[in-house]
Image 1 (cartoon, rainbow, N blue to C red):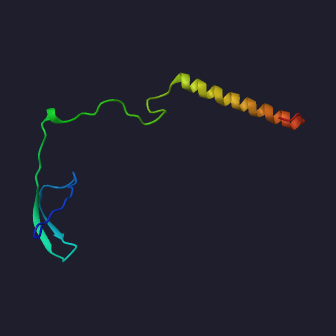
Image 2: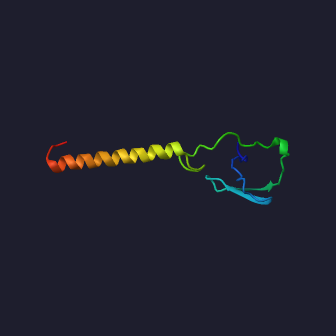
Image 3: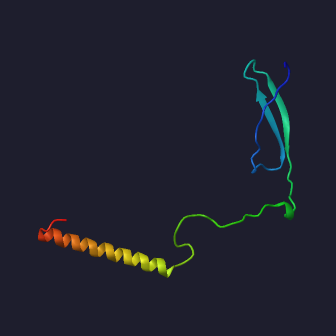
Length: 98
């Protein structure tokens, strides 16, 4: 309808309490509309707050300390890889092929 103006916007959570002027300009005709937005501070009661639940899923690895089973498995894997690499290089040097 002629003479009506509407629009939408979001107020960020970081907005400080106070009165803010809003100015909107019409794309057709350049008509300008002004208004005030009042941001007020409200405090939720402790019972209404949502508390985080569950564990943090951040991946695998060392945030909680050493795990002897995983450490032994890692050392064993490195030893097997080293022995296998040495064996392959030895075979190649002798000319046995791979």
